Amino acid sequence: MSKNKEIERKFLVTSDAFISEATDSHHITQGYLCLDPERTIRIRLRDNQAFLTIKSTIDQVGIGRFEWEREIDVDDARQMLKACLPCIIEKTRYIIPANVKGVQGRKWEVDVFHGRLEGRRLAELEMEDENEQYERPEWLGQEVTGQPEYYNSNMVEELLHSEKA
Image 1 (cartoon, rainbow, N blue to C red):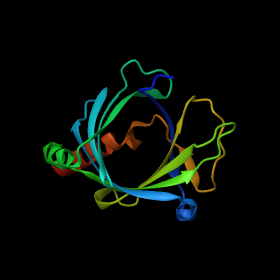
Image 2 (tube, one colour):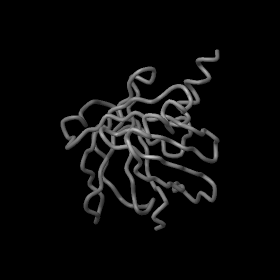
Image 3 (tube, rainbow, N blue to C red):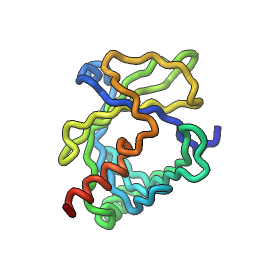
Image 4 (tube, one colour):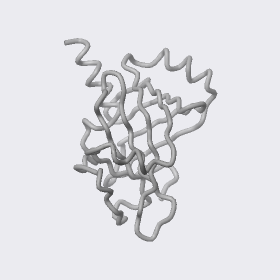
């Protein structure tokens, strides 16, 4: 697998039962410099770290897509967040060990959104191969992999459009 390929499955979350299984959590603030449908450029603050991420669906095969992410200076990230489009996302990410057949170290990442996205909860499982077998936790709901309305960048678009209405 390319080191710059992201393969993930995304699900709705049906209850807060995942919280008791979490081994860690992070506060995340993220904004977007570009929301083009084929490419996004994101600035993310996660606790005391910051990242610049570029994602693209160009040359997408299956559920995988190109992802380039690098750690950047936290103060630079705070400045760049001011240049981002309005509607910054705030969320708490919970980390939960995942049971993936034959693979150690996989984890569920459950995002609980705050602010204008309050009430949304999404779980993601990053994989090496889109056909990996995994155990579904009881709190995992409908799979929404590939459904654009569940991408964070599209949630920002939704918020931007609702502000204009």
